Each structure stands twice: as structure tokens, then as C-alpha cells.
Amino acid sequence: MSARNIAYKVLFDIEKNKKYSNISLDYYLKESDLDDLQRGFATELVYGVLENKIFLDGIINRHSKIKVKKMQYSVKISLRMGAYQLIFLDGVKDYAAINETVSMMKKIDKRSSNFVNAVLRNISRNIDDVFEHDENSIEGLATRYSFEKWIVERLVKENGIEKTRDILISLSEKPKIYLRVNRLRSSEFPSFDDYLDFVLERLSRDGIVGRKVEGIAEAIEVDSFKRIEKNELFTKGYISVQDISSMLVGNVLNPSENSVVLDLCSAPGGKSTHLAEIMNNTGKVVSHDIFEHKVKLVKSYCERLGINNVEISLGDASEFNPEYEGKFDYVLCDVPCSGMGIVRRKPEIKYKKEEDVVGLPILQLQILSNAAKYLKKGGSMVYSTCTIFDSENINVVQKFLNGNKDFVFESICGDPMTKLFEEERLRKGYLKIMPSKDNMDGFFICKLKKV
Image 1 (cartoon, helix red, strand yellow):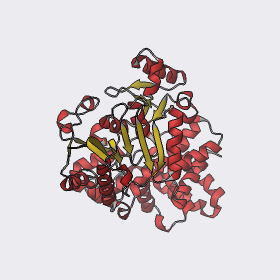
Image 2 (cartoon, one colour; image 1 turned 120 degrees about the vertical axis):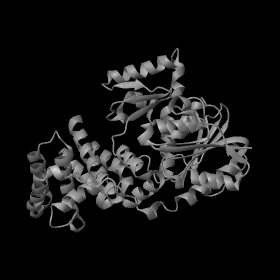
Image 3 (cartoon, helix red, strand yellow; image 1 turned 180 degrees about the vertical axis):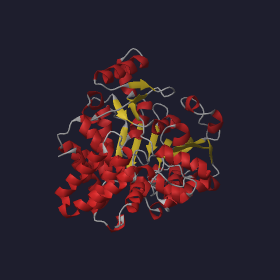
Image 4 (tube, one colour; image 1 turned 90 degrees about the vertical axis):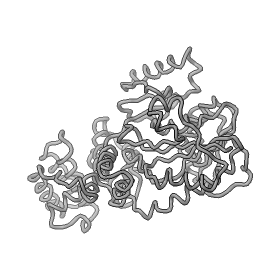
């Protein structure tokens, strides 16, 4: 099966069957015999089309008598793939983009191949005009950067039109790849620097270019990482994939050794395992998730890293558990959210409907309120999200504080935060990380103390 055929099948899965892009793509790539170059091309097509779907549909509509919303799945997916190659991929000649797409369409639905051919040729003839959009309006920004209009409206309301444009541009860029080295394995080496050097040398031996990240001791940035699940450093528990924004959550909570920690929404396990590593495999991390298959993910994560201080079970963070009242030194509330800070990694988020997220602040406040009851007096908790909407971040925290006078903001100054951010942004006890400003995933991290 060719790279284009795989990309088509994945995009069809996403469009028709509502599958997640990473799961569907992984499935088809594992079943294929493509080399790394062709695997990369298939991946580029899938995510390129996903990231630009509204923009591509607008271009197709301008050059087709039949509008995209009236097209059958096979036709609109093929046209999006062809148009993406024509507009964005300089390495693909126009004739190849058109001919290969039409050839693929003939095998899927021969009757529609002439139509696909005609539309793509129309686009090719007018390629110089495709980026003509008014980027000073909400409608223009939503179309150019392929976001649902309500998302752009909310961003403009919170940030203004100029900053929103910068945010949308940053969310359209390719994300950096970061690895978290397992602190527990550092004892095998004379020093932590020797440990990092060992990991970097092994990565280099596998053809992977990596470098240390200033300010975060356990972080390594890599230029690319194909088939990580087969890499020996990964299988033997030396490394995990985690963005630095996500790593900062554990570093801000910073639980002491031999403490008792609760992670209320733990899947897939990156933060729970990071907390366990920070605690040097001592004490206990009670890790919950609402879905059984996700609980299994956390268990396998711990096994791979050699972690044995995490106690994993099913649990609904929105329901109060009286057995936990006053039992924990630290609590992490990494709550369900709209995900608007990680669009670069999950482009499907761009197309969420407003009704799908409107109730999130109520759920987030309920989880935070439950967490507050589980914390011992003098204990600390972190509330975090991977979204940049104030309605899910500081607004939720302020509402919580208005009803819980025994909680105050706790300073998040100190390593590694002050090495990465201006201290004036940290003194408040919370931080909104912006992709456009901080060049990392969008996150909100807030630390609260029970007094």
C-alpha cells in the first residue's frame, strides 16, 4: 500500500468513523512495509490535511461547482490531499500531485476521477491566489488557520486580534519533540550529567540528534524520533516522550520523598510516573483514571520505567471519595479540558464544537473542590490544564478560592521555573504558558496551599 493510500485510509477513518489520528495512523503504518521516507510522507499528508481542513475546503469551494459539504467522503478527502500537496508541499511537483491523486481516485471511485482531476487543475492554475484572506477579521483568521469560528472569537475576546493571530500561527507550527529521562536510572552513573551524556550518545548511535534543554535537567530535545516503541532506550525504561510544559507540572508540585500523593486524572501516566521519579520511587502515588483501558496504560508505563510506588485503580475524580479526606500531602488535578494548548499535536482539536466544551469549567471546579478535601492541612496541590482559555484556567481557580478561604496561592518561583520564565510571571502562584510566547505547548499551572 502506498503512502498516499495509507493517508487516505487514515483520513477516511477520522472523517467518517471519528477515529483519533494518532491511533489510526499508527495502525496502518504498522501494517505497511513502507520505508521511513514514505512513512514520513504519509504522516505529512495526514497531519497536513487535518491541520488545514477548513482552509483547504475553502480553496476547493472556490474552484468547484459542487461544494465540499455535498461531496461524498472519498471525493472530498482526495481533493483535500491533492490540494494540500499543490499548495504546501514544494517537494511534490504539481503534475505528480494531480496525477497521483487522480490515479488513487480511479481505484476508489472511477466515476469521480474526472471531477477530481478538473478541480485540482483549476486550483493549480490559480495557485498564486490561495492565500488571499483578511487576517484582521475573525472569519478570515478562522478560515486561514482552520479553526472553528467560536475558538477564534474566544481567543480574540481574551487576547485581542493581533495576539490571536500570533497564537494561531504558533498552533499551526510543527511541535518540538522532547524526551524525559528516567531519574531512577541515573544511579547507574557517576553523575546526572554522565547519565544524560550516555542517553545522548545512544540516541546519536541510532541516528537521532538530541540536545539537553537548559533549565530542565531531565529533558532532552530531539529533531525526530521514528518508531520510539522499538528503541532500546525506550523499551528498557531510560526515556519517555513528554513535552516540557507537561514536565513542569510535576516539577511545580515537587513532592518530597516518602510523601503520599494523589493524581486524580492520571492517564496516560506521564505525570504520575514523573512524580514517582521525583520522589525517587519512595512514598506512594495514588493514581486514578475513569477508564479501565487507560488504567492499563498507566500500569504498563510504570512497569516499563521500573516504578513500584504508584498504586493505580479506577476512579471518577468528579465524585467525592470520603475515604480520601485529609489523607494526602500533595494532590495533582490535571483536569479534563478543551486541549487548545496542544493543537499542534492533536489537530482534531481545531474542529471541536462549542457545545462539547461549554460544560468543562463546571467539571473542573468539581474536581478541584474534591481535591481540596483530600489534602492535609499544610499540603499543596496543583491545578493544571493543557488549554489556554481563561474560562478553564484562572477563572476556575478564582471561583474555587472564593469558596475556599483556607487555600492560598503558593509561589512557583525556583528551579526550573525561574530558569525558563520571568519571575514576575511566577510570583502570582500560577502561570499561563503560551505557545506563541514560550515556544512550548500551551498549559496552565497553578499551585495552591491549604493553610
